[in-house]
Length: 318
Image 1 (cartoon, one colour):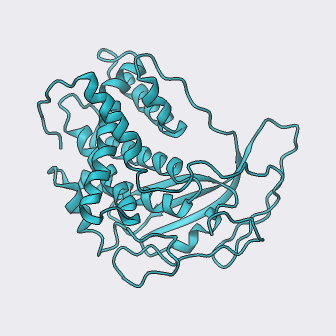
Image 2 (image 1 turned 30 degrees about the vertical axis):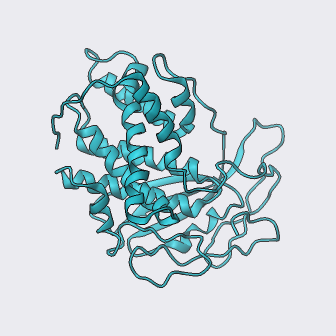
């Protein structure tokens, strides 16, 4: 449902402030590295599974091939929700992602696979897009924005002609504003905690969806908007929690569910309260998956807590 709203003019100073807040807010509670502590060993020949893992030894590519990154792809399928949702994230080897199926439940299933892929490289900022903001996005976020900008140009060639102008008009300010709002609103419920960090993922997905569809000039359908937001929040989770894959899965799950709930709601309900009310039912999870022991509370549980059992020094998330 689209709601027409009027917006006051925004100054350049306000946009700069939004950038500074949005670029740091969702990571404010986080001490995790965004990048691996050390480069992934290109000669690693196996992934150690354990009780929950089923990854088998993987072939080493010849050194003469173009540079490729060995990693783990985790596909999440949401079977028990009233929406057809799926997420896929990629993580480096030996950070624990291979045991993601420890978190399988009646509502969400995780499948982990090893793969070799070309490393993502940053994309230059399109004409008209703020370079500082663009550089703060992950390559996956950049690709998603370009893909949807090109789709909007294809649908409305008489209105839009350049990806940069579409990104600047529709995406930049909305993403900045939603990231900042997500952290602030999540803090209202949980203060400064790991729960806040994970809960903010859901609010980001929800508020970003609402921000898009409430624009008078928004042109994508509700389902297209939901899919776009799911892709953006998944890309953000993958980049922010690269060395903490279980937290990425929880944050990304919350974001996808938040976007889907906002699309289903259609009334512009307060995202914070709507998502908070969904914790006891298990749609939104806020339990830190890296807690020392499995949580006992049934509401919002993201369990069981898997412990790595690989060779000494191989697992970096213990």
